[in-house]
Length: 546
Image 1 (cartoon, rainbow, N blue to C red):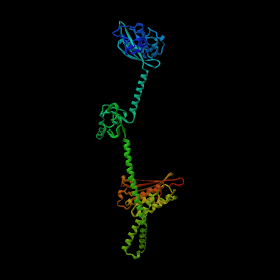
Image 2 (image 1 turned 90 degrees about the horizontal axis):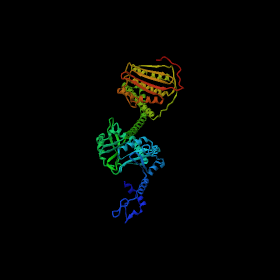
Image 3 (image 1 turned 90 degrees about the vertical axis):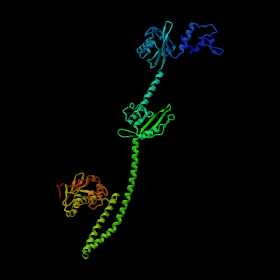
């Protein structure tokens, strides 16, 4: 008989044999008699009772099968474990184990097939079964060979809690893996820059199709040379018990472009050779930071330039006002001298004419400078009133005909409406059209022509000034309305580059727009569009007027 159980449950023996508890302070083994005494044997029935009591005291359930597969013993622990009455057991059915046990199993067929397979092999083994109430039992099988008899001892243990803990642990690991695989930051476990684990973000960062492709790879191959040296220099950081090292930046090489990453290292407390490396892609942040720095520098430079331009504008504005009075005085003196031409010789007359012409030029420059200052400071005094636009535009066009005839240039005025009354500022309209006509006269050669056409619709009034001049280069068209901007072909002509700028500002003040189309050697077309309101009228349409 196996005495291990008897030694384990020694208190049962002490209960039944108090005379054998101690002798001279030493505990005597009731199964091993002292050599100095005669052998003492317990009665057989008493030994059986003690063994049965010990087996019933165990939490695990014990079942013993004979060589025929019949149940010859079932412990009280198994009855309590299965939560059935002892009378519910019936021997000799279902492979000798009992119909009651068979009915408790979730999958009795699978359990008994597995049990039969293990019993036939004659080796110690184990298997699990599940009860219908949801609990899991582990069945350990041990073969015992007696004197002419063979027994199988089945020990049943409730492992439901262990299974629950195992399932919770598995579920926790699954959730943690899911989180690690899908967090935006790249996670890498490495040993000496050799990758042992990587999540999906790390695979994307380093240019691999899957994390498995990174296993065993040298991470240094994906870094620039400078970043590799910096990373190797950080190997000593974050080594004390899982603490993090100081974050630092590296550059990861990519197929399309390199990526900036912020790296933080953590060491494993159990193994300092392993490191958990967290890599955060900061490329966009760095680009935004660099962009923000450039924007700040540009804003500072722009503010400085605007300050310089404002000071320059104020200087020229003050200078224009200061020059206006003396220039007007000189102009008046010139006119007084011209009125005395009968008393002047030819040389003096020529000088007086030159004086008057240059005074007019100075007055024009001074007036344009003052006007420019008003435009930029939005100090224009706009006076809107009903205006006969067709009549006004035709008069302005006819006013330049004498100058055009001197150059041999033909001027044509055309309109699709007899009249159009618009509430606008006639002075601004006059300045706009005169600037455009002056520009066309300046760049149209002798024998050329200038066409001013007016098109009226219900929504807008369009003024087209078309000439057959030298035209404007294509790359200069986007800047032709800029202040002080002059075309490359205007070096031989006088001007300060603010005429078209002022014309554009006036049109915008009136709520309209201006545009130009031109081709070098084929002339230019300036297009002014003015919106019409509900109070504007255009009584009738005509075929044309020249």
